[in-house]
Each structure stands twice: as structure tokens, then as C-alpha cells.
Length: 224
Image 1 (cartoon, rainbow, N blue to C red):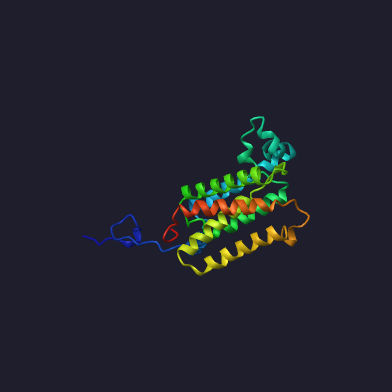
Image 2 (image 1 turned 30 degrees about the vertical axis):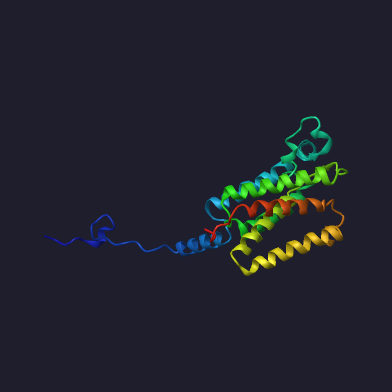
């Protein structure tokens, strides 16, 4: 009886096992890097979808902007969708891209600090706080667009998660947020934003809404 021939390949009982290809270590390193930035798998797909939601209204130009923006007098005629859609349209493509950049940075920092459901509640709370705050606290504001207020809510909730886990960067993030909000309330928009129509109160209301929701939603003990 002749012995098995390993040259027959992996189909035989004692066939040779193919070693890793040259590209496998590089692929593994890429996946680890993407995971470290919260941009792997479903998380990365979700980020791409949210970015697409923020950019797509730009295709409609001024018509879409007027139809979707937060507009005080339009609420009286039943255009209730503006309470939500106003936070997904922007003044320009540059404005939208700036907010998408902010989204990406916050996603890399905080995406896994809460469950997806908790993040939806945090963003919803930030949006609601902005809407109510602008409606009650700034009756002279006729219209508003942009996601920056909601993003401040995300930053506040994320910083709180890190503080709860006693991570040192939590104090840095919280300090930067408080310093920015204080500057905006006392001085106005940040120097590099002068010339842009920045509604700084939306940042304050969004941050408060996000933090209040996060206080009722315990973060993950460790990001997964």
C-alpha cells in the first residue's frame, strides 16, 4: 500500500495547507485600524449612510433647503416635518461637508460608547432641545439649518461616557465643550466662523439635550 502523497493538495487527508497570502497581513492590519476608528463593518456602513443623509439634500439646491429647513411661520400651516428635517439641510455644500467632518471625528471618538438605540435617543433629545429652545428662547429667529447643534449633543454625551468610565480624556473633552459654549454665549461665534450665519444658541441647546439624555442612558462599560 502506497503512502498518501502530500503533493495531491488539500483534498487528501495529509495534504499540504496553504500558507497566508502576502495580502492577508495587510488586510488584517487595515481591519484593525478601521475598528480602532469605529469605522469597520456595520459601524462603518452606518457612518456612510448618515453622511449620505446629510449630503443628499444638497442635490435639491435652494428648493430643497426652503422646503426642509426649520421655519417658524411654516409650523403654523402644519409643516411639522421641518422640526426634524431642518437639522439635515445646510446653507451650502461647504457647510454640509464641515458638519460631515465633525460627524466623522465624533464617530471615531464615541460610536461604540453607547448602543445604536441609545445614540438615536441622544440625537433625538438634542434635536428636540434645539427645536424647543429656539421656539421659546429665540422668537426672532425665523429659520435655521444645520447639524452642528445635534453634533454638540453627541459630543456632550460622549464626553459624559468617558467621564463615567474615568477616562482622562473625558475631562479634556468636557472642558473643551464647556469652554466653547461659554465663549459663544459671551462673545459669539468662534473667530474662524465670523461671516457665517452661526446660531450659537442651537449649540447650547443641543449640548444640553444630548447630556440630559445620556444621564438616563448608562454607557457601555467598555466600548465593544
